[in-house]
Length: 141
Image (cartoon, rainbow, N blue to C red; front, side):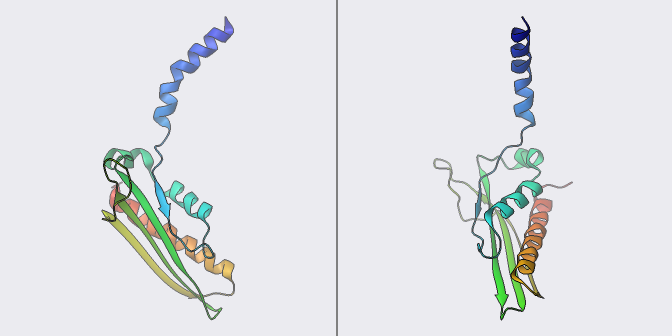
């Protein structure tokens, strides 16, 4: 009897659990691996996207995102970084990205650093800045 009640409770709660789960957008990343790694980029996207509010305006079946962080050390002293994030439409039958950006945000920075790790941290900061800028233009708080 207890097992039957537990199963019934789980089936009753299932629609609420799936409704609370945020839809996952397709995200393509073309960043320089020596500057910033893919898990760091994806974690920044996960933290930045307000998926519930965004999904109402830009359904994941029709829209996706692209990120690109490039740059590096110049003469071992100067870190130059460009971070770009873009909202892209998808084609109807294949759901592939179309390079016709609906919204885009680009952030540039250059700063003297002592190590490649500091340059990577700067790249991560600029990516977060670009994401905040893009998300604020897509979803008005």
